[in-house]
Image 1: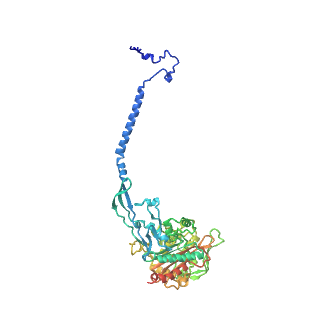
Image 2: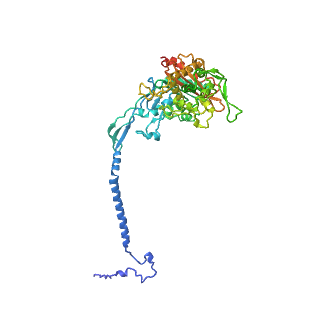
Image 3: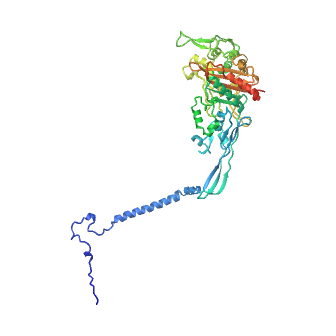
Length: 547
């Protein structure tokens, strides 16, 4: 028997709640509602967001493809192409005899010879100023001082390079050399390293034994201005600074009160003292201030009225009473009273006056840069009435190289060279003229030759019978002038000077020597240095004495 099931149909209205039959619905919580339709504004908002994203993506793609496409292509090429640079061999530095002073191993190497550091210099990482120059990068090593710096463009050469293709693992696939490096040019210096080394040795001994703070010396050729020797004491080690590893030693250089980084030959400023007297003499001759045979009496001082205290005279002292002296003897014995008279005027001698003194000192290159190619040269100072309230006593002081008067050893070497060659002004050459075309020398001072001869005779007398008598028995005839410049108001310290040229009959070389800040009671000075050097040269470098 079959059973029959009856299915009753249920209306949806019977399933869903009827809010009218149920109370207390919270419509804010959607109680009593099974669904809610999405509003039109929601569709519009979602559509706007979608379209914005699509437009942004299309815009970004267009920017990367169109605007930056070439840039990214170049970067992609760089990812597999490398430019490898070849560093050229740096040029060598030689002295005038072919001795190598700087050469290349794994790093720059310098000859271990004293007396060369300030001229040769050293190398190091480039400064921002260096990198402004064409072809210099932060990875390069460049000249930082001396010839290494001044002739950087010559010594450096030109880099080469090649293009190397690599894969994603940085393995080299191909190489293509684009440019071969060009080695740097060699530099031949006019210096004789033997003389520099010996002069430095002499300075070292005297400074240590006599209490000077430093020293400098220059030897030049009076015909072409070649610098044969240029020494500054103390100095640094080019090798230590180039290597940069010995921090303790480098810090000691930096903290040394004696300033080993200072090239005293071109940057040291010193009161010249009596070594200006030959130039004062030739100025007086050329201006007709005095006849060379006229005698002036030195009692040991001169006195003039004091404008501030009329009852008390101003006294200007000589270093001793010399009696009657003419120009040649005044140069020989370094008579202050004579030069007070021809400089500032005294008695029946009118004097040059500070304006003429200034002009003639400048004419011989004092207080002027010489134009040497080494970095750091100082100008110096020649006193002039524009410096301050000027008095006759200031002119007297200027007449004997005191007061506000500063020169460098190189200036004095060139000035005495001009005296020796009868008025040809020289430009200093640090390069050997046989290897390098030299120009710039040859202009002349318009002063009669006979005036130069008178002054040179006085300098020769200084050796034969005057203040430079210690040079009288050397293998070559020398003419010289000594100088002692007092320092400070107490005058307990002095700079000891010597200028000289040789041979007297046919001058070939001129020299200046300064010993810095020694005791005023010291009897050893520039004359002693010159004697030792020339005696050594007679045995070891006779070509500088035999003509």
